[in-house]
Length: 70
Image 1 (cartoon, rainbow, N blue to C red):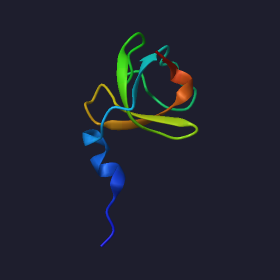
Image 2 (spheres, rainbow, N blue to C red):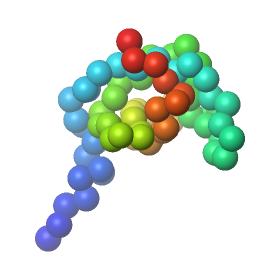
Image 3 (cartoon, rainbow, N blue to C red):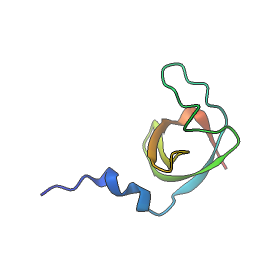
């Protein structure tokens, strides 16, 4: 039985904190899930994405271009 690990990321230890610098997306609607100036807890990270608890209180994966490290 394989476990889907991303389903438990909300419970992961926070890796670091990042600050949203914009929510002006070209392809996707992120203005309801990200707030410029708000600090988010990173629960996982890949080369291109941060996985954070977004404004919906769920895990979301977002391109790193929306954030700056603190």
